[in-house]
Image 1 (cartoon, helix red, strand yellow):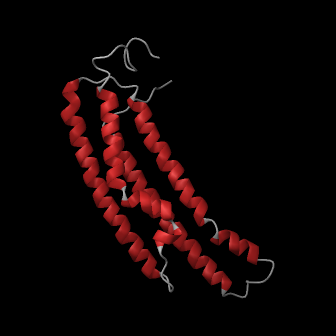
Image 2 (cartoon, one colour):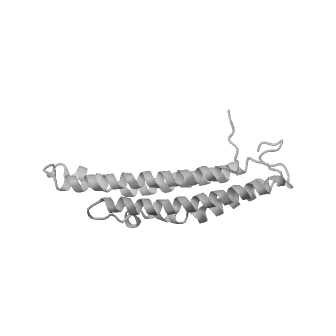
Image 3 (cartoon, one colour):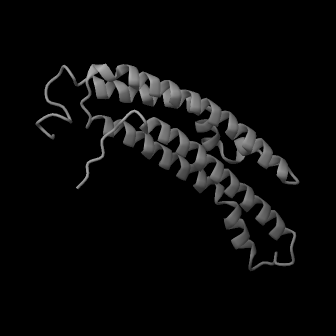
Length: 175
């Protein structure tokens, strides 16, 4: 059995997955909104198919909550895996460096998300407002820098605070 332990690059992975999932779900929402508007104007829009068309258009809320669940699980995984690590204080500059790199990448990807959603909304005939249609994804991506800072600093404090205490996650006592 392999026990996964935390390292400073975990925040980079979380930031990249936050962006990739947000853009993927944005493309999914764009696809479903275009598909439902096309189906509403097609000859297939009869009484029997209206329920299916409506269920496709209502799937945006589930995607929004699914994104929060996935990102929250990744953030919780970074924080919980930090308890398994017992690091020497000499690694503080390395952690700080990776936190700054993660914050810089989060800022770039947050701006890229805004530009991507602006471009995707311009592709549809009635422009889609992603801030209204996917509010939770929009909030997380607009505050990605703050989330990265808080989770990175919290992970660093947890990893490096057990050096002078009793037995921790990486010592002789595995509990």
